[in-house]
Length: 229
Image 1 (cartoon, rainbow, N blue to C red):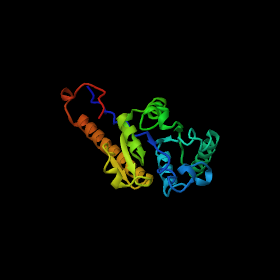
Image 2: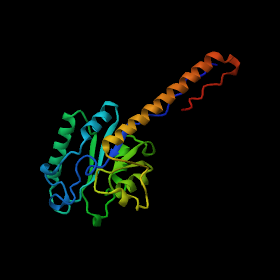
Image 3: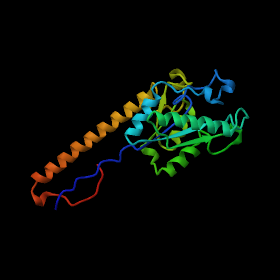
Image 4: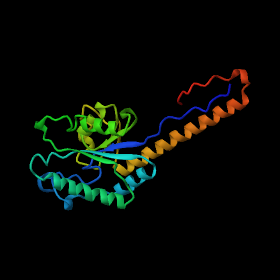
């Protein structure tokens, strides 16, 4: 029988990222209450537009997962949070990027909810909505709770140094991230290069399979299995 061309592994099609310290300058220590309470306090980090544009052009969805307890602490309202989000999304869209959805937990730690990171509630909801296998994607963040939340679902975790946590502080965590990069742009370039290498390897294996199918005697060819490479 004819040897099949076996299918390659599913490519990366979604990533989950924190907001403050990854997309925008972390507000800690320089804004009122150390939260982004108004649009004037939202400062995009260098390279973010390019990073999100690259993800969009390569068909990789982006979902934001962020704790925003300042709402329940009374520092800003849900409407003010929604205004900041709307303007953030407008700027990202204008610069060629796209955010599929934004998940916020507005609860305080003492509220003991299931969505506040490091609990995985928001990630679970997002993975379910987008039919994402957590073991095959990444959570990108700048804090220990990001790594803990991603780890609890089996995600590969990426720590970026563009936020509030130093590498020295990170080195003392019990749970370490799988990868460390300077910022979102460096992370995205690495992810895309990794995907290209994976695609190239799959193509080479397919070429080898096809050549083997041409060269091998018919009686030596295995039956179709549908096995993934």
